[in-house]
Amino acid sequence: MDRIMVYLVGFGLGTLLVSALMLRRADRSEQRIDPWMEHNQAMLAAGADALPEGVPAALLKGRMIDYGALPDASHPSQKVWLLNFKDSYPYVRVVHNIADGSFQFMTADQIVIDLADDLDVTRLKPILDRLNLRVRMFNRKDKKVVVGVLHTGISAVPDTIQALHATNESVLNACTIHPDWIEFKQAQ
Image 1 (cartoon, rainbow, N blue to C red):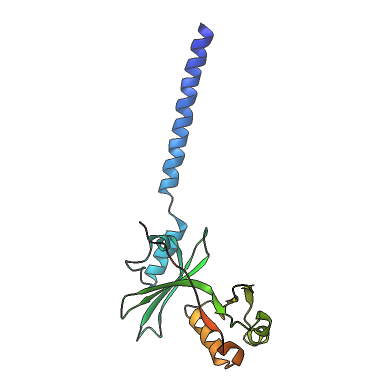
Image 2: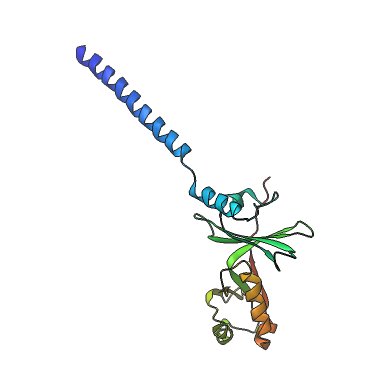
């Protein structure tokens, strides 16, 4: 009988000790400042605008890596944020059109070329090489080519599309070149 009492008292004290340690660890993790939020606060302090209302909640979890206005800060028609995510698609470009308040969401580091029916990706290679662009992925069945962008700035996507159009290559004239759009499902 004494052994059972000693066992029960030991079990009870052990449970209380483990519970206290777990609560203490949980409190510490709640008090720790999220480094992503700390970085975003530093970007805001440096003059970046916060993401406006109307942006999907999933984007608010991203780390702001760049911000700016296009075509320039003195006459902006668009505000652009580049976000980085650790667990999902890493680089996202958020564009806020100032005139109508609309948003566009796209990948920040690649564009898509929809090939014409009679065109193969191998015919694009010399053109892309001249621009120092790299094919990241292609799908012959769907006639899609995913290409990296020229640089990492806020205007990388439109600059890359413009550079491809500026080549005046007949091969590209038959293609559709566009950003790699990101679509968000509406909550029901």
